[in-house]
Length: 111
Image (tube, rainbow, N blue to C red; front, side, top):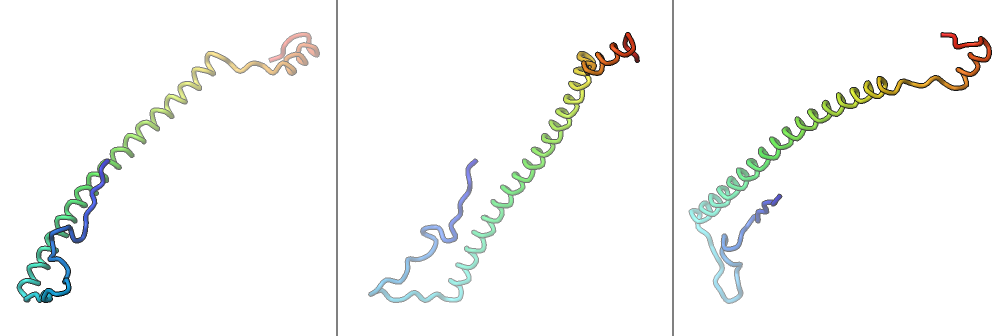
């Protein structure tokens, strides 16, 4: 997935820094308000973009959790069925030492 990176002050957004030999920049109140408004709009757009990405990832997480639970339940059910089939097809053998002792003492198997 591609990550979105934002710079606080992208190139070309603000005037170049003061250089020696040039008069210093002095902003009027209106210019300062415009700059603040531009920054606020930029931050709002950034917030909106991040919120959309967050909502998308939250939905994806919920969907992944739903799939995990579904697969877990299926796996658990299959495991139980496999155990039932194994016990049905291959009954537990009698322990040989106990079978031999019973045959020797009683002349036959005692149930």
